[in-house]
Figure 1 (tube, rainbow, N blue to C red):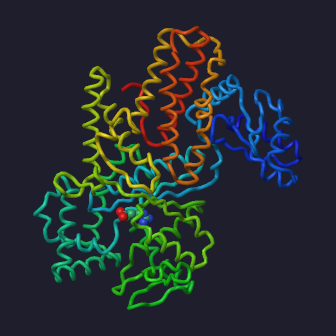
Figure 2: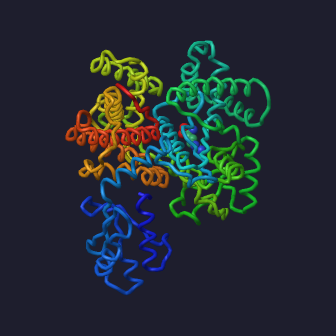
Length: 569
Ligand code: ARG
């Protein structure tokens, strides 16, 4: 609530001769305690007074200091209440003026955040395990950009590693046995799975695949590298189709192989820092000294057979990113099953005494599970492919919409938006560390804590505005006194900027989700009690203004999550 908070802080600061920045105003826990609160503990200590006495003194001293704001003391707090008509006028004006930018700021200008998200592995379709990273990461990109940051999205595709030796050999041997023409992504998956089994069971196959991977890592041109390149291209094309559907993009697609030339220099740099040792033929960094929890799990940089590892490539990438972007934060949106890996990376930086180590953050998250909290699998029991999951939800959305609103124009694109909205919101509605349960019927409900519920509320607001327009209502000078009982909605609308800022600080889009759910609940009970159209012109105008501002805030919030706000559904 910058609008009223700033003059208030200035008035308080002037009373004590301190800087306005030293004055912290909070949102009170309870509406009855006004709209803003000043805790007096610190000031009371400085002034050697009892906090409640100081609060009472301040409340009377601040009476009338800022127009339309009254002050009263509650225990050790001074509470401030903003007169509803003035609050409404100020909030609506701010929202109208900022439009799509409302909720954002320019505080991130000149600051860079690198976001590593989605990052699937080639030779496999994107499976549901990647959906959470994709959705969370894309939302964080939008949130940081809304705050003016330069957010750099990087897709750290898994396109390097010993497994590709096996895949190349499998393609060499069995390419004629699968369909690599029409559905190459699925054909590759089949060969990939066969190669994994063969590496286990057949020593000759294993030998051949180690040789193939060594050839790949050597950088030599030839059949191995060509095959690998082809696999990469086919896979990327498949991923792109899914991203387009979700309205998502990265600034850079840089697979692990992108860092190929940097692997040796990276290993050399870590060695030069004097933190490596040889253990059973492998090059490792012992991490015990910086993190006791990693006593048994040193970071492996190079295997006995000379090849590098996932961690080596991630270290190369991290150094490269810092050089290129000088990021303030480098966020890894990756499931919590990789917690050990990121803890090791950070521990290596600590051992090297790299001062920017805290800037690398593992933004971890829980699993995506099926109803009954079982592992999600496709009907055939194979890997559940993300595209199939989206299809399934969109199909069900189409059915529900056809039933509820058979005359809806553009039903196919609405169904796509509702299906994707349901999937996305389900992923973002709880703290990210919690597991997500995917239950098609539940996530598509128009009444629960769902994406469609938010989209439906937005469409209802849009419909009221369309009717007002058609009736020529809402154009009178608004009488904001009729919004006397609507203070909590007004304050909610005013708080979007704080909510967005908090979501970015904690990498927690769920803070926006919960905010939007609360707003929609308030709005739904509000218009059950307050008729908008057909009232006196000045009353209607005030209520239309509230609807318009709410629609705008809801639309902006949905956009940040990656959900399409709908005009009708
Ligand atoms: N490709 C990995 C996987 O699917 C995720 C990569 C995450 N990003 C990273 N920089 N390690 O498990």
